[in-house]
Image (cartoon, rainbow, N blue to C red; front, side, top):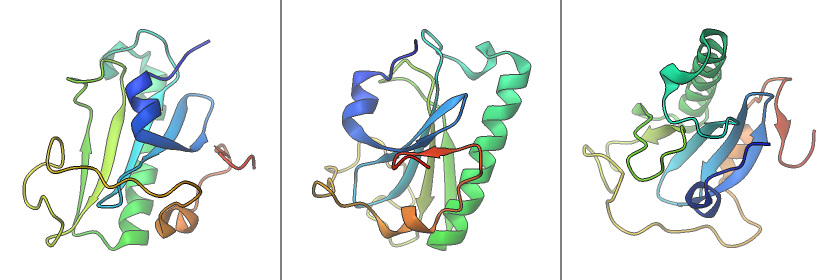
Length: 140
């Protein structure tokens, strides 16, 4: 069974999951930020996935990016799969705004995260229209 890298588990909270991926949100009040993690142990690169899973991952990322843009009114959506700090393949989807604390630069390594208090989450999460294949963290 696949496991989530400890750094991803510590920095994010569960949003839901599909057969292929865990869907998580970054626990940092400064940004609307989703992280998509394929449930495959030892997977480091997108191109290491079988083609059908690459396409499914792309579809999931595109759907979430469009929804995040719609519910936040973002000026720009950043999508990245860097993996320099965490080797497990994961894809960041970040809503960016011209007045955010890191604009126009990258969010990685900038400032200190501002975690949400326990039992609280950003309002935009409730506004996402997750597809039927997503089992939410609340257990849909």
